[in-house]
Amino acid sequence: MKIHPTALIDPRAEIDSEVDIGPYVVIEGQIKIKRGTRVMAHACLTGWTEIGEDNEIHPGAVLGGAPQDHAYEGQETYLRIGNHNIILEHVQIHRGTTAGSATIIGDNNFLMANSHVGHNCRLGDNVILANGALLGGYVEVGDKVFISGNCVVHQFVRIGPYALMRGLSGTSRDVPPYAIIDWQHTVRGVNVVGLKRAGFDEKSIRQIREAFRILFRKGRNLALAVKEVEKSGRANQHVLALLDFIKASKRGVCFGASESPS
Image 1 (cartoon, one colour):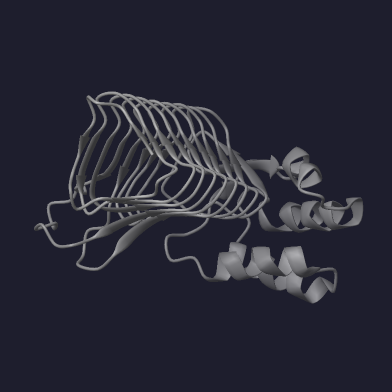
Image 2 (tube, rainbow, N blue to C red):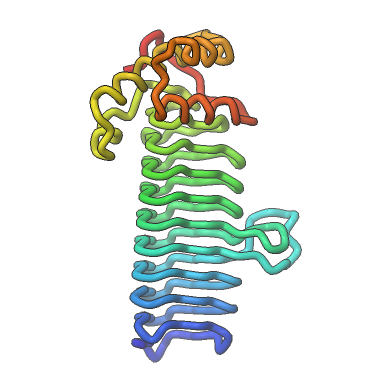
């Protein structure tokens, strides 16, 4: 274990012998860090935080701080971070609010400088949060989502897998899988580039685009559009996942801006 002499380490912390701790790091609380993780200068790890293997935690990051929630009264709550994540400068990730609850970060995520993950959020795998992206409490982010710079996401919103939020956009509605959204929870099209990179074949992408044309026409009743897609007989597994996501929404889903998203 490499621990810089200026680092402050709580004796309750459990740190693997292959962890690297940089100068002026503060580790306060019942922290657990697994092998291969590197914690760089001036990072602060606090609370009941568990960090997996081979993560990079860059200068000034604050992980496991108390939630920004008036309901929090000091209960034991958690932050759990998986493996192979890159957490850049001054990222903030808060632990859960209610006793025993957790904020959960999956594997292979890339959180850029000054991004914020609120209490009880759940991030899947291979998620990118660009600089200044802000997630309110209880936000759920699916696998391979890209949230661009200075985007804002309201508490309790769900963002479906393979979705992309363009820079400066915001949403207080659920973001459907595969979608590109911008401005205020407005669907602009299908994240075709992201789907191709993820290995979706042309037929699957074409069927997703056909479903989007039906679902997100401007002014279309979404419940009726869902039934139309279901009756079409052209709903593959990816389209069915999209329909299930929409039907499970409690906040409402982002709406369409044009007659034919592309």
